[in-house]
Length: 329
Image 1 (cartoon, rainbow, N blue to C red):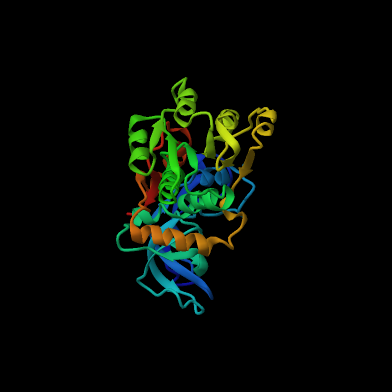
Image 2: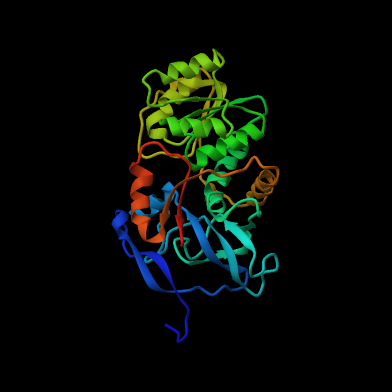
């Protein structure tokens, strides 16, 4: 290590496995930005389910070991590379991904993945924008091609992506239905754009949704847990309806005939399969921040040293209530 190299605290993963492989180290070198890179002093970092899949080694993306997890950070620009003109030291920003990992006191990011964080949003909210809002926007506007007046069911609406989907769908003129398993979660869903909310732990909740939407069915379903819900989703759809799979934790058996009679479709979405539309997404979401309909709801908060507990809870706790984040102080 170079003499005088600045050091920081960061979570490091030396082997794929359970939450226990997340190791807090205090002697990690602070990265130095080059060319089109910026260095961000991290105030908060979002915790996403995909972080746990990557950590376990089950995700299609396998970073070189050792690595630091974390995509969505919010903080203050500490330094910029020589080719960066859009940002300067002291700017408040958030990211959609990082180069060096977000579970750290400082994170390196490419300047095209960094966006200005408006003063009306705090750093916790900034850390809740990246993957949740860009994924929800991509699912609704790009993958489902929603139109004003259509109905959308957000299945698992009280988590980070779910709340984002409700807010975006309402802002774009859709009839918004959501599901959540706790009373607190249902309240959050109604407060963030949903016209109606249903408890997906109730045995007859599918019948309640059918009664609410009538014979036509639901035009679009944003699905967070396809391995549980996909078969029911196909029965809820309207003619030409679309299920957009945002999350799944295993296989499920479906009857393809259910897609034939309604000429419905199932489409998967992953945020980083294409990034060329990101600037368009960002422009729409920045407008939402300015107008006020984009307002992240913060859920469980953990200090950096509790990252392993956060990973355990994001998968195994029942009933999401807002976006989970790590705090750096």
